[in-house]
Length: 147
Ligand SMILES: [Zn+2]
Image 1 (cartoon, helix red, strand yellow):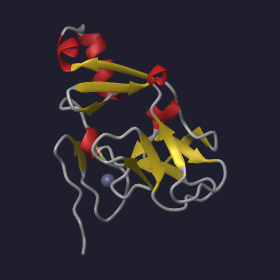
Image 2: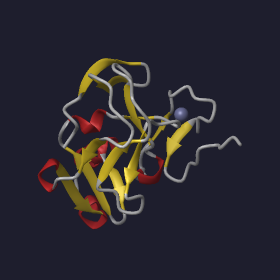
Image 3: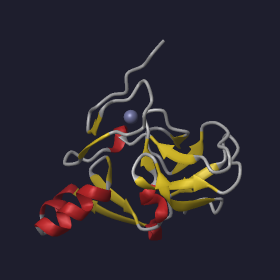
Image 4: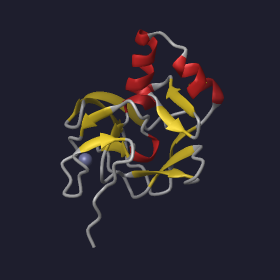
């Protein structure tokens, strides 16, 4: 479930559609949490049995956790990637929620780091504009860290 302080707008500089804060969201506040009825989940074995058309839908919208592909059925799927995101998953190894990692201002875009969860078939250029940008978002890509 997505925090009701967040809505989808078609003004994102990252990828046209994105999620934005309707009002200030404080550090640590819940952005999204897992509820099974809001998520479609299939095993990698089930994925291999899909038609080419259905596979493409999963490739475009899913993220991978362990041996499963998951896809949000609410507006959460419009949350864009950033190499300098303002949210973080929790707990890190088995995320069931996403929280604000700092205060997020009204009308600021909500972003998340996709990289730990990329499925192996998806790859796209990153438009986040940050100095540490990975360039191409794909499985096993890593964000350059500056000290
Ligand atoms: Zn980037």
